Length: 364
Image (cartoon, rainbow, N blue to C red; front, side):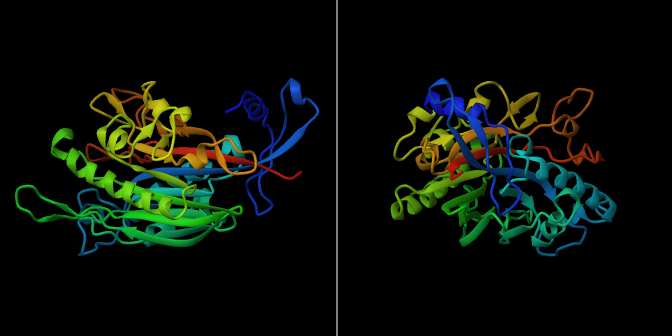
């Protein structure tokens, strides 16, 4: 990003993303443009693994028995609504310090069905914000899916579908049922943007042994991305999700061909907006006293390029406020979960959400 533009963005003080009137930012430029004032439109795009957002009703088609009043978690309506309120507080606030408004688009993972999302967007801080839902049931054996929430006044979906991930057990040959990959293309403030929401296979059985499953998931994501770019080489694509791999993992680095620096991004590669956090030891979830950064957001070159009059990346972040963290003990600073060791903690999720903010200049 040019020095002039950096000086401009650092001076951004006024944001108003909350309505159809669009968000504008007024800022002074550096010494070479001291008298020139520009306005900028800003939008937040976020991802959050909601950690087992289940309703209290037993679905005979899925393995949700633990999340019923009679199940192992004693999952009552009261606990369910505590979780809904907690999640709505987080989701409505992501990126708000920078934009003074809730996210325009939110990808989510680990949701049981569309009904829990309907409950979520009408609860607490999300109520009345005008979010829409795009959700498809996946064949995942746990009964969890990915989905997209979007502010209907800002993002207009024009096409959406899912791609199944076909996996086979190496010993039995039987199919392993997992999450589909969701693809949504829509118009945001006059620009076409495609969003891919993923939740790749877990590390169950060990990282190395399970890696081929995530490599295959990455190849499917790459296929989707390449198909979009084949029709529009300058397509703006955002890939987000819980990948169950870090930015340095082969599935991400080699298959998706991600780059840690904007200057290294070229045709056929992606900019990983989360990798610079990972390289500094910052993560979104912790396991066995170490941090991982599974919740990643990657973008195509069209969103990296510094173009004043087109949407492009301004900044990225990990939303990890103190109220979302464990306050004491061995796991101090880790994400405060809903359950831990069979105990209801009344927390949020075992992941922190991630986000990017895209901006473009608009007429005064």
